[in-house]
Length: 102
Length: 285
Image 1 (cartoon, chains in turn orange, brown):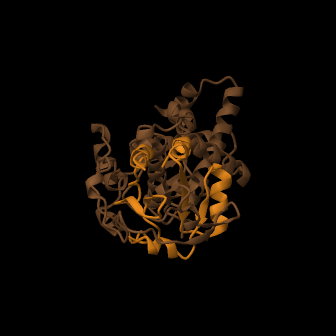
Image 2: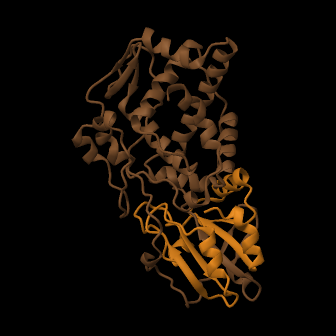
Image 3: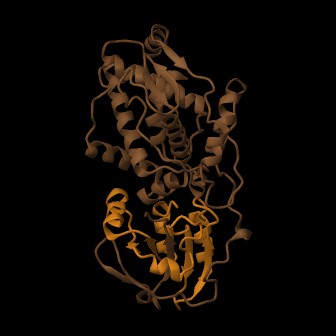
């Protein structure tokens, strides 16, 4: 997901981007160092949160399935996309379009 | 193609990827354990695995070729570049051996820092996080280590090309001559024996592979490799979103996790303040 390039668009829609990965903090730090992403990358090493959101191991490979959830100010999920395979992600424009009504 | 492919590989891969390509990064539908890079064996030593070519006795093993071909496919997709057919990859592996032998760089090393810097620069050019690149590699049955080895070798090849350029040699001409004066053997059959294809684990999820276009002259070769190079390039179908645990309208489960940036983040802290786009990366095992 080219989230970085569209980060401004997310900010304009008053949306904070939070990324999660099933990995330890050290690996997450490496990601941040390498990419200098402007949003937090959270470490979910025991995939507890990925489990809660029902996206862990759907592909049977011990990793999270690529997925995006839009959560509104009331804390409700208003849109979600769970990938069908390892490369199936919504593009940033699709996410932005679904943020617009909020 | 020969030298152009070699020279242009890093340049091409460094090109910014188009937005549309990013939505569906590369997936090659096979998993196999990558092994050492081609040319890693001393000349003359007979590897105990199938060899697809030798260059004056330096073998290119089948697994090294497959790994390289899959890496080519993944990286080309990430860079939104055409995917080379596997014959082109083999050509390039042979060219690389020729170049490294000529310049005495066969056993030269590249520092990990140099490799990481190059990978970081490639990823930055693609606008992708390392984890996303790792995900694409893993989906192709590769590891980050395969990329590290490949990039290290490409850096050596770049050095070799610089050395030859400093000798005022025309690289294409030199390469053509080197190929003529070197004993290069291509073994038949080039591809993976059918039973080995069946041994390769199938992809973890359902999608329709789209075969890489194959020129007629390498059809035999690529028919064998096609399952390894099948690329998922289907557009995202929004109507087929999987029904996972949470669906629109439901409260988002709260959590607190440590961020790589050093602070704990709690989802409910955003409540009443801003919308949240929660993105799950694949992660790594």
